[in-house]
Image (tube, rainbow, N blue to C red; front, side):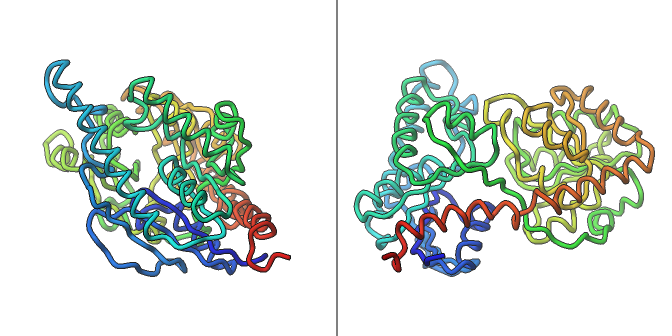
Amino acid sequence: MRPLRIAMLLYGEIEHDSRVRREMSTLAAAGHSVTVATLTASPRAPFELDGAHIVPLAPRHRELLPGADSPYLNAGAPGKLGRMLARIRWAKGYAGTYRSWNQAALRTMPPADVWHGHDLLGLLTARNLQKRHGGGLVHDSHELFLEAGSAAKLPRPARALLGRFEGGASRKADAVITVNPSIAIELHRRYGVDPVVLMNCPPLAPERERGKLRDHLDLGKRPLILYHGAISPDRGVEQLVDAIPLLPADTAVVLLGYGNLVDHYTSLAGEADYRGRLYVVPAVPIADLPNWVCDADVGIIAFQPVDRNNVLGTPNKLFEYMEAGVPMIVSDFPEMRRIVTETGAGIARDTSSPASLAAAIEELLGEPKEQRLARRRSARAAAETTYNWAVQSRQLLGIYERLGDRYGRGKS
């Protein structure tokens, strides 16, 4: 493999982006020089991480950074006119901040052999840098960008314009990467590209000794139902918590993570009806996560069909439950249903109401002990054979081997 200077563009923070970190570490270990331009809220010196050189870029104009409350997702100002003005201000601030970050990248980033753009905004900046310096271009679509968050709620003309930007840049790319077959099909339908599927699976670690989460909460051998990840709307957290009164009294429901609903559920866990039944645990480092997840009897992925991205997605926790050998309940959506059915690692059910989710939980908990153990073995076996980073990353290395032949500094 010919060595390449690879520049990744990420319009976000690097520390908790497991996909970007796995990719940059894999490419660095293969002998490439990897630099990642990221977004930061305030000036910060470059640093080294996972074998890559990280260049945090603080926009000069920081009107609105990702993660700020969006009037497209929240009620916001009262009245139709108030909501419209709030949305205009939000869109103007978001666009202004991104333009400033894009300009910072153009000023700061040195020439590279390949520009690797993560999601739409990373792609657009990568394309701008490619036009300035030459080299190859990779589009890494972590999701259907226009079907997630505020982008899914934008007016149709704005979405159409962003779609033209994404399609135009994506068709110029030497390679397009995405996270599962369903999203690959959708990107092909929209833009005529043929993405390579690189699923965002964790590295395979030795099977863990259980007890860390149970000991932390003093749960003993009680049935433990776990949701981990972003504790935020539309991910089924509301349905899971509302299902608690419908579950056997000794069942413990644990929310492990971070998000804008943490304070609400932390407060609720102290109320009489939920005390000793609902637990909220702060997020733990990614490397330590399997030591906590493996204690669960059932893992929950109850995403709600609020947008096409939720319906077609394969969230990280799907593979994290597998790696930890935890049987799971997933929403009855195409990709998640296919994976848990093929592997035997869980069941796909209606998760749209507390009653249907409670019924699914009781179904899994009610299976004979040997069947539950078989599900644990099936989940772990699927991680060992297919759904781990060592297997999946072969796709990434194959792409860069081909790009090395075309753009490598040692090419003839």
